[in-house]
Amino acid sequence: MPRIPVKCLSVNQAFSGRHFKTPAYHTYEQEVLYLLPKNLKIPDGKLTVSITFGVSNKGADVDNPTKTFLDLLSKAYKFNDNLIYLVSSHKEITKKGKEFIEFTIESYPTTHDFRKLLVN
Image (cartoon, rainbow, N blue to C red; front, side, top):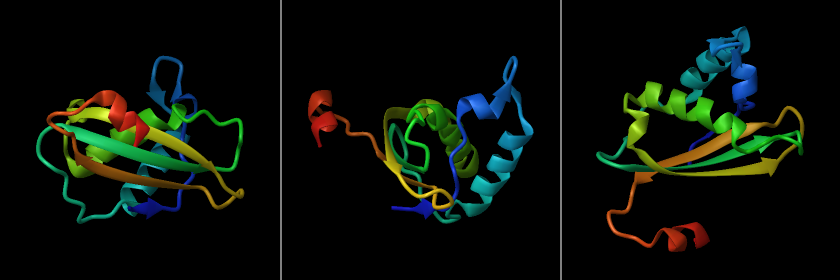
């Protein structure tokens, strides 16, 4: 599972007003795009993305950084994020300065019981 040592950026930090990218977002984008593995193979078709955000703030929402990170994944690996059919986000509390993002991108199962996926 790839792991990049970067503190995730929430939607609130990424945009001001009517979705104008903030300087913090531009910095985050450059850092993430630089640190993402260059040789990651993205499966064809529908996708499942699992993300763990290592955060130092226990009050951080797990959904806030999800959108910005998914946008950067699709930009880095040149796929349309409308191919993502299942997203699993998890937060893990870590020490300040040790923030990280881990993720996997896999093929979305063609036949499944959605409830069973959530249990695993």
